[in-house]
Image (cartoon, rainbow, N blue to C red; front, side, top):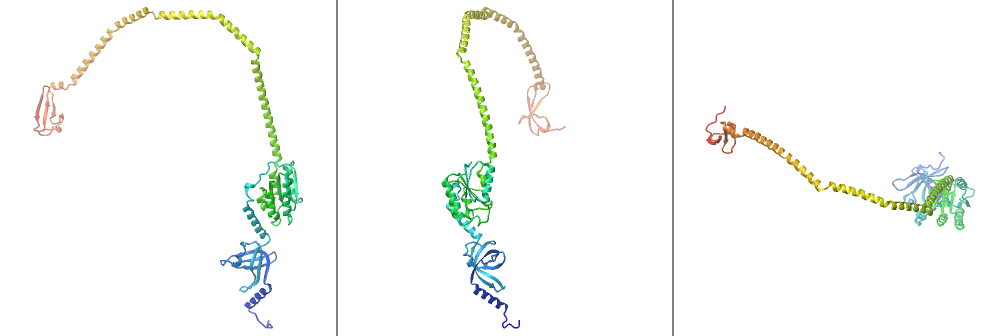
Length: 447
């Protein structure tokens, strides 16, 4: 240590190291995954760029960050153009990012969203242009790999549900650069041949890169231009592709696509059995109704038969002849009975008989008239005598004749019943049996 000709300070070492790094590497391109992303108030970002074996600290200043066109997030796979440097205050090796682009799956997702928005604005996702699926397909076309799991899943479901539906497979590559052209060509070929009334475009699950052929614009436009209804069944339930949005029906899996386009044979058999039973019952009821109608018509025919009509007219003729022969005798008997009734009524209303009745009633009334009148007079006389006696007993004049008098106050005619009713010098009128006396009150003496 004492042999060194020059002793560095820490800051000198960091400065020379930084200068050496910056002069040696200049600007480099590097790819990795963002982690430990920090966003301070300054608007700069600080993060770690890593792969499966190493990591390096990175910084990107606000001015360069505005040019990225997306918001960096943890987990994004990005491509950086950066300067190799050293943060002297801590002695940390770092990269100063000048440009940032999405790489790998992140770039694909950016392209996915761009194409999705483009086709959406063109109206390729509109529900109004979706074609309905056939209720029962006469032939199903399948655009997929002939060796993949998707075609086996589709055929297995169709065989279990409705094996009588024929299936035509259009074998294509479902991954790689040629896949998009083979898929679009197969869709166009199926439309040209017109031997299928529904198409299933399918493949099994995979990464975004694996499914990318179904996110290509050429495939989306082939699906949109198809006159045959198309079911998209790409990947698993969580996987969404551009083909899913453009297709007339999106199935979460290839098996679900086969299930969506094929009826359940057991349900159909059950329904057919039900319809056969209904048809049998309907025919049976119709036959019963027709037999009943036939019996009614036969009965009506018998009733309207000429021989039956002749029998009825002959019987009616006999009845008329019998009534014609019996008519005069019956009429004479009825006339005699009516004459007898009229004679009886006439005798009961004879004038002499009525006069005798009235004379008898008059004699009875004359005999009965004096007794009630005498009885009534006696009762009225008795009532008058009783009323006169009672009136005499209650009359004030009778009381006065016995020596009593009535004293009244001259001013208002009030009858004096107590010394409290008069005052000194009041004028009084004393009524006697034969006249009245006027007097003044000179003194009042109470008991």
